[in-house]
Length: 177
Image (cartoon, rainbow, N blue to C red; front, side):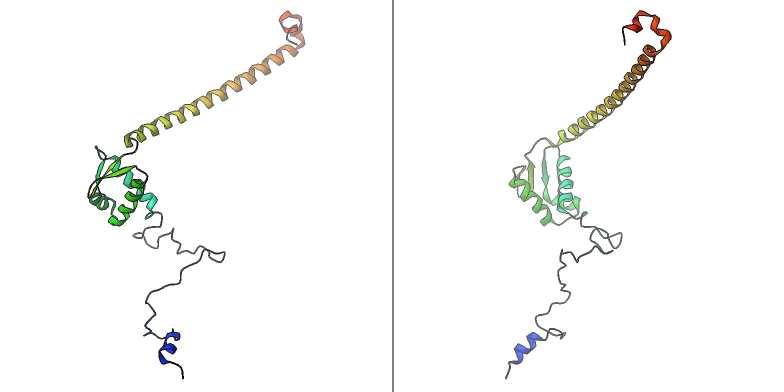
């Protein structure tokens, strides 16, 4: 006869099954059949819920770097960073491990790191310089457009002046044709 334990393993529908975990869900695939539902990860169900982007490591890294840039000496306490950014310290470690691996930061002491990359304060200056150059390019483009319109207007006036039969008696108009 069959083993009762083996039979029990196959009866997955029973509520008291030893191998079935409560709340376990089948992972959703990324195949063609998967469509975005109203319960998409990008749309929170309630105002207190955060989207996947809000909790992404990329966004957290930007906030971490911004916090680090506010430090006058480039040293940041990781406990303070976790409190200010309202995340688990593990997430802070994820960021610091990558930044340390690419030599942008180094450990100063147990919970302190120091920025080793380029000056973070210059980023603001570079941004201001970029905005200034963008504004200058826009102004120069507008000036160029005005000059092009003026050249077209002068060309048309000159053409009308030289083609006018009454102006043919003047020597300067005869030489322009």
